[in-house]
Length: 397
Figure 1 (tube, rainbow, N blue to C red):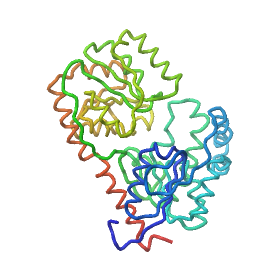
Figure 2 (tube, one colour; figure 1 turned 90 degrees about the horizontal axis):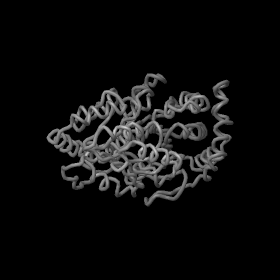
Figure 3 (tube, one colour; figure 1 turned 180 degrees about the vertical axis):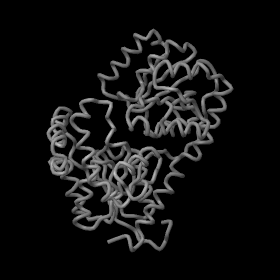
Figure 4 (cartoon, rainbow, N blue to C red; figure 1 turned 90 degrees about the vertical axis):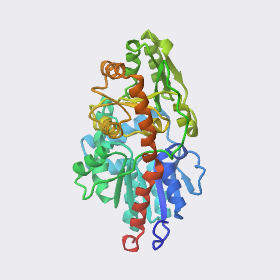
């Protein structure tokens, strides 16, 4: 441990995700267990290949049942916000998580995302457990582009976060914009600690320059990620090729493929399946420019700091992002890419049309320099410092 005067802790890391495939959670588990803490992961799916215990939650129900459950337990917050925690605990997975925490009675719960706050609070009240709230997204606006989500779930999400975020002993998140918004929105006494969602550093051989210039979007394919405008821009940029690499809902992927075919540039748009996590950066290195131009009409769109950006940089890609976002600040700081005036096909086309080989080479070189600073080896130091602080004797029960 960094501070040898602090003792090992019993830590429960709760996440309503497939633990072994949630790489921020895996990095947290790996870092805390390497410090000598007694770490238990609570979540879905298989155990990660780490020296930690795991408690598997009951698998989520099918899509239809899940939607009905969300409607039944989250919509009432529109009328009675105070009902949100009680209804939240009607969900079997949440009850199982609470039972697991009450049985473990850990020193600290690392609660990933807003859904974990209610169960974490239960064990805090019962055993004086400390809470670290790790907000991976701008929770109250995460799906604000979806009208149905705004109608059914947004007020429930806000009610849970508002009630319990100030109960947490520490709050961490992924970007400066989210940290600032959480502090202002909920009147937090301190600004959340920003721990970037960066992978461990890898050195790869970037693709040599050449034509066509290869654009890449990788990750989960879903709406509000700027994929449709990226496809629509391709007829305007005959010197470019686009790779869309990743999985998603089959119906949505089919819609994207139909849009590509109708664009007239379908021969320059390639769809590829996702690759294993340890191959993501090597695969990305075959491109020249990594793209993430999400719409900016929600806090989530403006403040998101997805792990794909760090992966693009580590692969030696220039990055293309939209203005007035946290991503734009990063690109400007490191001079490692392009900032479009908007997330529209026209704005994207204008930015890329002005890109010449010399500028691209400089941006890609700067991306590799930035990657040495924007990696988990650097970000983890903030997590280490936080847990050393929490482990001081006067901060535990």
